[in-house]
Image 1 (cartoon, rainbow, N blue to C red):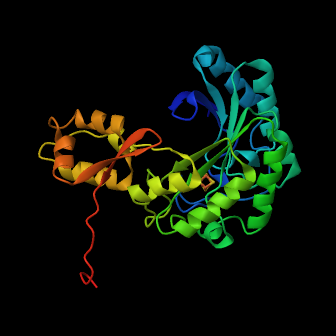
Image 2: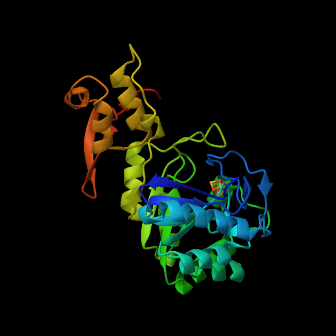
Image 3: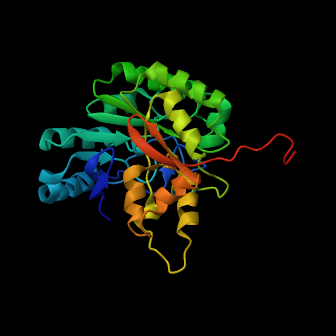
Length: 314
Ligand code: SF4
């Protein structure tokens, strides 16, 4: 098994080489939305899971083939990469032996640990998860290891944000009914303000989550979150990439379902429309089924919500 793979195209990191220093699925959280399923090795104790020479050798091989065509080396893994005691050595190797920027994608739950903060210091970008502004939401969303304390986790993030000289980014993963209310979003915003990330990405579950009941918020809620949190929307549409038009499939219904689950950027809509009959989306707009909404200069397609008359359904 190679510990380096890619290049992987990504909107955040361009073409990146991924590095996994941990086995699946060692993590300090067992998030309800995790696309890897429930955590099988819930832990906060760090370890050296693989010989670091093997990991470095895999990176070396891939960089020698792909290096000139790579925007980032991202240290990630099927779980929490800072559980690896070797992450500092891996980052140092990449910085010394390549000219490719290094990013670490972490849930940030171990940043209270001075060794973890020290290990990440040489990275160019550290992207953390900050999706909950209060302890109850934190517990429901992440189901953390029992020894993780919400306040300590936040304190660790705040200390790291003051020490780190690279770019700190934050991802807010939104789950309907858990952290998408106005009050929950304002609480999250308050915590984000304490760490002042350079970039904020708002993501929604787009792949099968660990728990069946997990759903992304409605499109307009996500756009509202972006205006409260001040972030940019991170939308991935694996359904569209894999989508093939089936004979007899109702295109209008398909588009309605997709844009109800995620606000769709105009380019994504037009790419998808190319597989359907001409002007299907424009006709839906004319019929009042969907509408365009502009956020930060980008047009998104969202369904038109019919207002429920008072007295109806009550
Ligand atoms: S922190 Fe990441 S890998 Fe761990 S359970 Fe949550 S989503 Fe999955």
